[in-house]
Amino acid sequence: LLSKLPLAIAGAEGDPAVVLLNRSFGAYRALVAADAEWLSTRVASALAARATLELPESDRWIKQVSGATGLSIELLQQIVERLDAGAFSGTALEAVVALLDWL
Image (cartoon, rainbow, N blue to C red; front, side):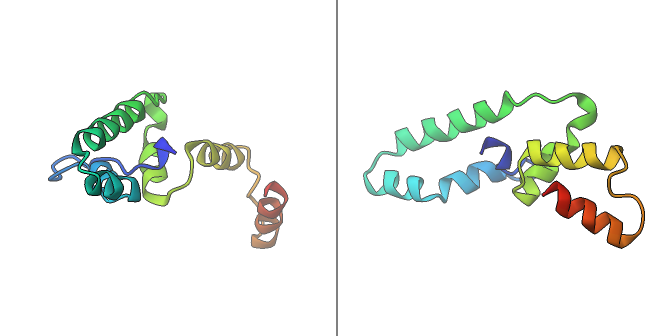
């Protein structure tokens, strides 16, 4: 799930993952219970755990696609592997059949 958190963009005001986590139902419940300290530690923990997801430099773009689309990094890597193997080459019909076989 951590790979689905949006990534910060250079020059942006704040980390969109922090905004998203602070707007969650868990955050709402913590604020209602006056437990802002717990909330801040959970957000910091999630951001720290997200930072440990290491990918080779050439695959870092996939983190941005994952964060933007909500698809897991693992699923996106499988799609890239299929594309590199030429699984979706050919006519449109052949590409659709290959995609449906993969699903």
